[in-house]
View (cartoon, rainbow, N blue to C red):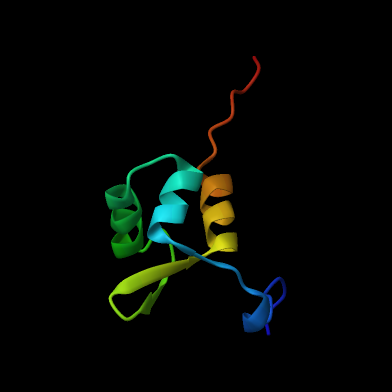
Length: 69
């Protein structure tokens, strides 16, 4: 197991609707992020599940801070 990885039984998976609610975007936006590879997900039947940590990582990487001059 790589550094920072959690055992699979401790990973919390979110539905596309839950990810959309957390990010305050549409479900279609989440699907686009998954299909483009920007947001990792696993397929369960016809649905996707996104690791909660992946959502936090994506938001952290996408954060745009205001630099003081």
